[in-house]
Length: 479
Image 1 (cartoon, rainbow, N blue to C red):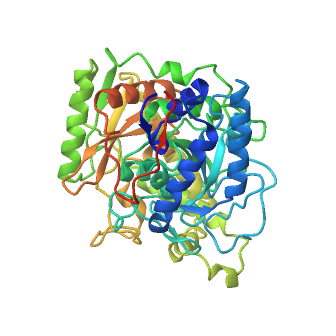
Image 2 (tube, one colour):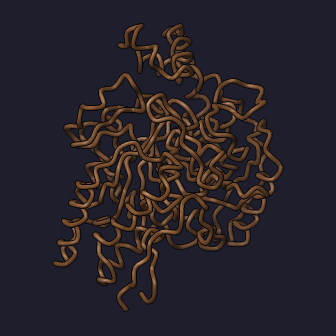
Image 3 (cartoon, rainbow, N blue to C red):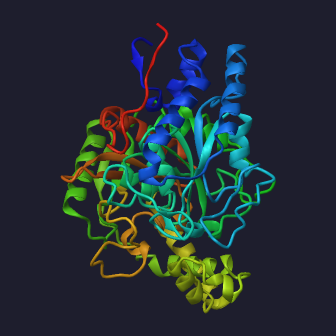
């Protein structure tokens, strides 16, 4: 690698190759990323916990391994952020809530975090989330409002909004997010990055997700190949998770190659009932034309499956009620007002109502599953609207109160447990990103990433960076 290299802009795969060739070291990369974090986070509020001494120690240990050509794993030395809902040993997981003890340090790693630690990742900090990850934007009673690096008046989305803003700005190429109704895909769509909600159980979870079998753990990156790299590390079973899938032996990095010629892809621009912003619709239409140009057989379909909102709402609200059930009336006063509202409604849901919602969910899964008897993949917009003003749960003048009413393309695939990837597909006239969502049948995560890789290779937006902060530091690379 010759000339000046902006280390904070390199992909995880590029970093690993640079470590291998000794062009630069994990210490140099970590310092560049920490410097970038210093530049941007006062504006974005993407991080809620940092321990820079621990970060530098991890980087030094990684550098020593690379100097001996003995990396621990595929992501040794790669800066990675962890969302403030996942357990990490030695750091606090506060869930964005005043009801959680900020001084209590984690005693064990969550399974996915453990996998990354075993592979030598450098954890750079904990990223912001709304309280308990309950909504599709990122603000909380503890950390305040997080912002979108493409326009800091706007929300980065949520609930993994801090993670998305960090990756979009070059504060680590890899990030952990969680997704119970779109929470990796929503902020990825709003900030112009890649995110995968894997097949449920592909990434083990412990403790169980706050929203039960709706909750997935997934990578957030700038490239689909980096997503595949992270999945190769974290997509393993764990004995603590009864839902975790057996290792099927798939190498996601290798499987992401090969193109999409001959793939049969269904395209639903509206799921039969969604009103999509005209500029977003045009960008997604163009992206679908791009898939056709790459050799895919695309069929625009009329989607006649009933809207699953009621089933999702019932399960989500009941889970919210459970998540705060042990809190006293006094402590509930410290909760996000919206969370307290939906938890109160959720507490009124009967066991019969919940079982009926799960039954409706099963019917919906069958209807969606039947689609994949004819097609390899389904594509939709990731979101029907661009990012809106930060600090609000819904856009101004929106006719509905709750966040899921503007995320109708994401939560259905939490109900079905299928893999769903979002890839950036352009920018609207205000310079805000749009996303293309690629959905596969259960356990077809590799096919989803293969399609995403083919699209991103041909129609990349990686040359565009948000304006938040100043340019990152550069070093003279070794020639």
